[in-house]
Image (cartoon, rainbow, N blue to C red; front, side):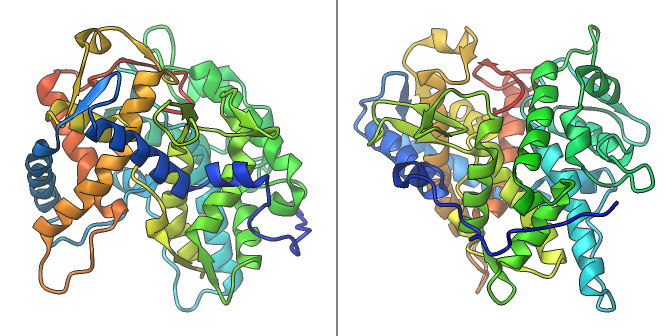
Length: 415
């Protein structure tokens, strides 16, 4: 199929209202989450108490988990590609003989796959399972990775029958619940949380691609994001803050969140009185998407810098680790007994404390892993090494089914 990209003279970073721009950044995530942590350190929070004396124990456990998983401390970054690799699907490496166009097409296909997969990776719920013909029964993130991979490799996202491994706006816009149910093996006896909402999210994604022809081309293809980013790179270099800013501005309308400023959706953002302006952004899936785009962009020939601009991810494995190991305790035990809406103040508080605590843990775990002139531990390595696996392990010990300590009412699109 032919395609056309236009408007490459536009800046990579959009220019929304200044107040909105500040919230659509990882810097805002970090500063607002540390506002909540500062209140916790003053023991002023309504729902949680912070126990810094537990940090050393958690850091030791995370460091031991990391050494067990990666004995030589060659720790890959936390991204969707780690799940795909377990499934035997690897990002095709570039070869010295590859042309610039062939490298670019590898990157486009990787982006075509990884963006829908990340967006479909909000919690699956405790009962859903995916039966993979090669890898057996999978659940949660691994199961969602396998199902989204099947969606992509089966040509369900391509509008070109001669080129099934691509993601086109036309197919995204027509995604129906029954299609996802079939591919994800979901039904009454295998319920997937938020199935309807996930299908609606893919349809909204298709519409957004068509609304941005300068970025995604005509007809719109998701992988053309690579061409847009490459065209705005400086000497082959692109900064992570610019990628995140671009995606947060484009993808903001995807999320079913009524919070907006100046008509611009704030995406994965909540409210809390301890924040300096009342807002607490997290941008969890979008940040994880950027973590997962770094490798495809590099294979395409771009040099990606400023990765440490990103924060830790405000999700229930990282946050569950803090609760299960006692760094956080609830003031009212009923908070652990009753389901909590994802946008409720207790959940906002928990997620904010998680992001701030990960900054502290990164330093503490890095000190325990330090060996010679080893480069400092990155946030992506901390989570992969790391806090995510440790959080899953302690959840399994505390609750046989491994569910998080807080029961979150999820719609399958954000958390």
